[in-house]
Length: 180
Image 1 (cartoon, helix red, strand yellow):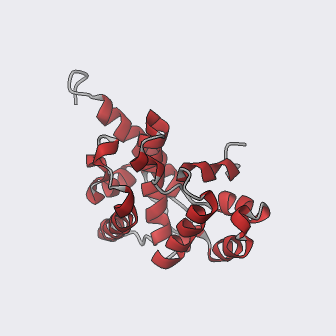
Image 2: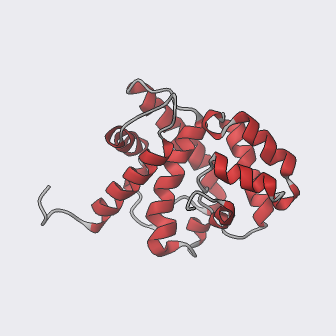
Image 3: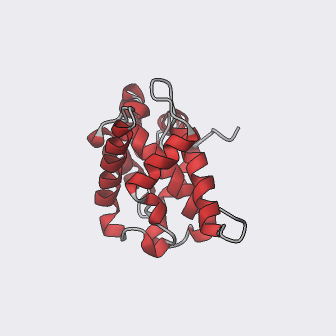
């Protein structure tokens, strides 16, 4: 691709795919950035160019499950075994980088995007008894985010929604200490 053909959308996609692939590649499921980018593209996420392309607030959870299933299949075709937790991390970091941190954080569709889940976040949520759901956070910690099945992942998203009571889901990351 020449400089004249390179667009900001391609630039955003590459950077978001890099960040997501680095975050989601974990022990027992290591993959390269190029492989992660291929899986993201196979799921259709790369076709999302603006917040208007995102699912409506009422349909985000169903669409997210479909994206996870597409990623799990695309990963299997490449010899990887993805759980819903790993697929979700790839999706969530990609969309966070592209839209939440891309200046669209107040858009109603963007406010409902699932945040990336990891051990650091879950431990802080439990330590702070966020939302009064300490036992739920501890249950998620004991399962380990990278081993989540669909229902375990969706339970954590439900706890986040209940904790935030209508506020943007990205706000839960105020508990995340990975930046330190």
